[in-house]
Each structure stands twice: as structure tokens, then as C-alpha cells.
Amino acid sequence: MTLDAIRSRLAAGAKLHMQLVDGQRVWWFEDPWEQIADGIAERLKAAGEIVELGDSLFGIAGNSQSWVIGGGVADRVRCLIPYCRRTKRASPDLITVDMGGYVAGDTVTADLEEEWICHEHWRAVPMATRRLLAAAKRKVKRVRTLTALLVLSRVWRRAKREAIEGAAGI
Ligand SMILES: [Zn+2]
Image (tube, rainbow, N blue to C red; front, side, top):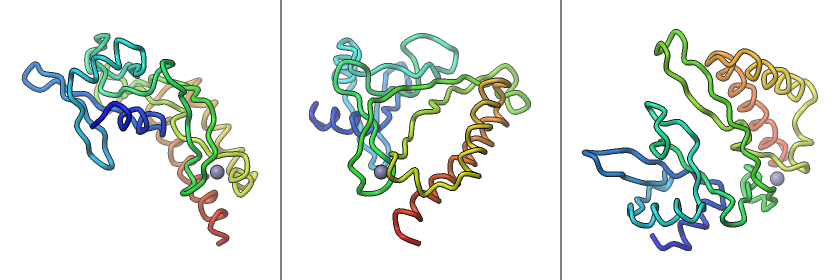
């Protein structure tokens, strides 16, 4: 992948994944899957064009499994409705929750602002869903549990479905 191709995928909101395999850093994008040379990822890192999300297995800085666009270039998030070209400035809202009963002492970090629906498409989301979403967001920030995060992600999927259906005129 060329540097420009990598930058445009990052600008479109794609997450870069990193895993240590036999002591080597392996970097890739998903959907479509594309591997990035370690040297290029290191350059982007050094320039601040990518920043880590803090989801490293042992909390070690620089070892995160997920990396996103940094302040190095125009960091925009695109509306998730297919073919919508509206973008907004990325404003990551990271939350780390305890995985509790699943894996004791382990945590997972999510970006609550990873996806975005523009104002035009947001209008198709009913008030009831918006209220549920706001409540679920407040709750996950307060209790920081995996269960609350899963509830929020379920409500968000409902809002997405409603916005996409609205955009399709269903
Ligand atoms: Zn839109």
C-alpha cells in the first residue's frame, strides 16, 4: 500500500490493527484486508499521523492493538450512511471498561465517537431511540462495565438501522 492510500483509508475512519507476531509488529486494515509494512507504520507513528487507542493487552504504551488517525493530517469521520459524503472533525471519546465476569482484571477500550451519523440522516432516528442512546451513553460513562457498553452498542445499532432505513426511504 502506498502512503497516500493508507492516509485515505485512515481519513475515511479505518482502524489500523497491530499485533506482535514472533516479536515482529504486523499491521493491517480490515474490510478490505490490507497489510502495512512495519517501516511505514513506524513513520506514521513518529509523525503523529496515527495514534494508539490504548487497548494493548498488558497496557504497554506503543503496543495497542488499534490505531487511528492522529492530528498529523486532516482527521475527519464520514457519515456512516452509504454514499453520504458529509464528514466531521474526528473527536475520539475513549472509554475503558472492565471486562468483569468475562476475564477478571482485563479491560477493553472503545471509542464512543468511532461512528457518526450526519444531522441530515440523524433526523430519521426516532426520539425514543435518541433518548435510549443518550441514557445508555451516560450509563456506560458512569458504571464502566462491559454490560453497559454492550447495551450502548445494541442501541447504537438500532439507531444506525433506523437512519439507514430512513435514508433508503423504507
Ligand atoms: Zn449522512
